[in-house]
Image (tube, rainbow, N blue to C red):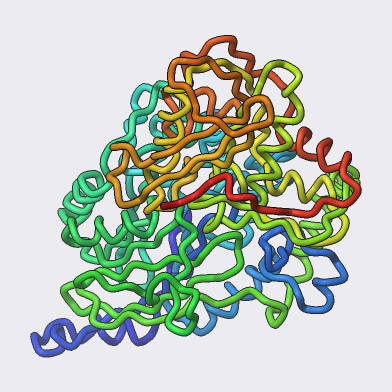
Length: 530
């Protein structure tokens, strides 16, 4: 594991004066925390829609992010920082063909190149099970941390992923603690050998353990979402900084699009997050007093726009690794007459254009099999598509998980139960929100979650919308992740007439788009909110 040894001259002078009590009281320690989260394999620059950006647009300065820009920005930030660490809030995996083709191997290479000091485990690090995460861990030269999981029964990860790590930065020791979503077993595929526990309790246990070693500067790398991070800060003691992830939250002191200030202070704890996809590099500057208490915390995420020069050798390496992917992703499958909205903040809380497209495509594929309803989880929709030619690469960016089409039969009551689960965590913008086809529903957010929020459901029958019959059986299509209980859809696990091995959903959508003479996105009020 890599130790950072950047002893500053000022730090040495401060240590020399420790013999005098007044000097001890005056001692301060400054640390810059550089951070990313939810990178999702965006090694290449992205468009304003978080989808692939063309070489031409990149040359014109219209693109954002990419590993080559991050390399430049990280080097510049370290130069001005003095004491610094670079950490990641999880979800390096999944999102583009780079992950589909290389799994975690290229992510490990790039993170080593950029000089990360630690990361936490995001739920998507488990998308392909413990083995792929183990291979990733074997290839990185920094610790991967996760405090709220029992790995003792999982041979691939037991002893490999630690709960926390103490590193030395300059003349101080910093405690780092990792955290992953408590519901990772519903969000990904960790297997049955791993159990997850509550975040605050797990963090506090590690804080107490680290503090016993005399470490009083503690940073939590939390892939738990902004709202959970605020609760952790409120319900723990001894945590100085929480570097967030999972909810793709943008915090800023200058943008009206930010969800909160950067940092968001909860007591003496600074909470930060830097959106997603490498579009920003978080830069938090903190000052600690001699007791390890933050006396000052300031900063702002740095946007990785065209003003950041791409580092040439990193860009060349990314281009080299992209060569095997080109034939797949450059294939034009259709044309979009307008941009197709697949933004997270829309597809996880209301009807969205990309949700309609995907659900329509799934239903069209299997409607001759007696299937009349399509369900697509909003969390499975990962990007928008801009107007113009639609490539297979863009479709795979929207639907990167290699989920297969699943068909099954359930009662109308179970359909309603599934919809109820879909709207149960909308306040947290969770991915279980359902986009639909062959079905329309109305829900009421003023009703408590799982207490009857879904107040009206209609299905198409003989060309007309009719009330769903709780006792009738309906043929449904979804993806294998949802059908197997992902995102809390446990009511679908014991469905009848199950077939989970259809084509990749991305392929289904691409084939559907190919039948259109230019696709025009639309909304038709199939999902209504009272």
